[in-house]
Length: 282
Ligand SMILES: [Zn+2]
Ligand SMILES: [Zn+2]
Image (tube, rainbow, N blue to C red; front, top):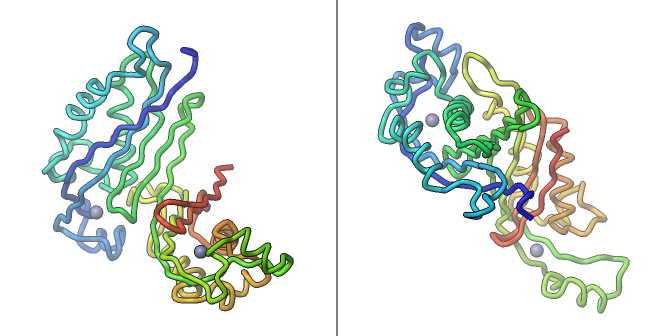
């Protein structure tokens, strides 16, 4: 059993200021590079970092790595540099480098990866800027160049529906779907997470045009699904049972050809307790 690899996740929080502005570039250049994000002044985030460390549990102590060891590395190499500080002004790695979420994630992976004890690997991380915006950076241990860097975004829509299959009898429908089959329907506050992988722009340090992603999701999904009846108002769901599985597939098919970059994951929460996910990293 000790031959198995286990991945451990550790969550760390820090608060930092940063700005989309490159010293040494003119105001005009900064506006060109960062567009509407450009500002000489800092704004700030309560960043949430989730680190994934893997290895085989030690035959004696049963641990992949002592959490205290990981915490000490993260404190010394990351948190002490960034917490309560300005990324642009106080972290040498960002002197001439955009403090985009992608770049912060890449810096953390470099810093933590090289300090982990022998026998453990940094598999990657999730770095949240806000609840509705994060970066996922996962490394491929067999191929040091191989990494997946994707941006995740969270949206919400409220819609009503009824689970009902025309090919089944009334009794069968009631038996199968229970209260979800009530004739007048019911509703959910759906939460939709969309993860997209793009090319990292060396200047902005951004990999996905977030405004464009928001516009695409707004136009194809939110405008068409929010405050609607999924059974009646949404053409692509006609003739289908509006289970969250089918709704998630419909959303995947709408978004995949249109999002900036490559669509990697769609996760649809029907309630806080169940989610339905499609994923393709090929
Ligand atoms: Zn920011
Ligand atoms: Zn329902």
